[in-house]
Image (tube, rainbow, N blue to C red; front, side, top):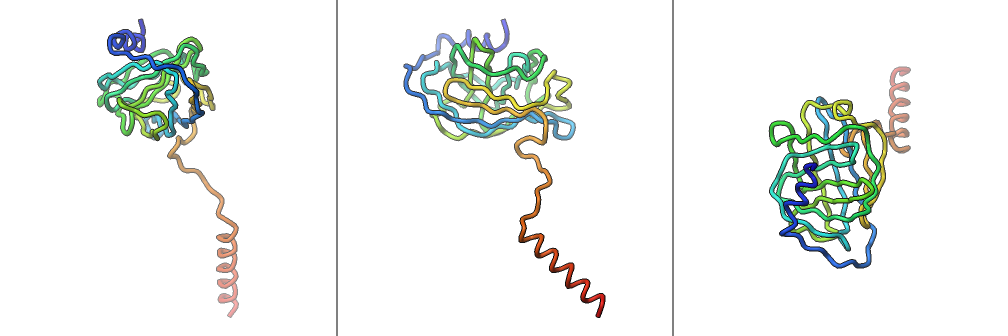
Length: 204
């Protein structure tokens, strides 16, 4: 039995299944990127829990990654998870399940979040007491790891669990990454004017 199934089994006595109802689409943007010597999992967005079965609550536990499932968590505090039996999300690599204890091998901050979606079982992890549609954001840092170490493959992976769509980018600079951004046209005009003034002064 995998760790995630043990969580479900342990929580059966405290579980409450919500009645099915109309769903409204929500969206989470997430990324897993090599930042320095570490892997950083970042996320932000909202989750729609309408019609999903609720399990909770659970104490903080190791952050986990399983690209082949697919499965990833960031759990800095107590958490619950919502479940459905047809969650669809593509695998993001061949790697198996590995747990990274906190704070020695990983460190999570912000809200609790994670997802599992292997086609037969979908789970979304959220903070205890989470209200559907509330904004979520946070990150988990996995120390001294690369994408190759965990068997993850770069790409953009999009799937859904319930009414929540998750766009998960593996590789790149992450959600908080910086890249070269072209200067706006006005800035180029200012730079050109300064260059012209400098040329005139040299001629004088």
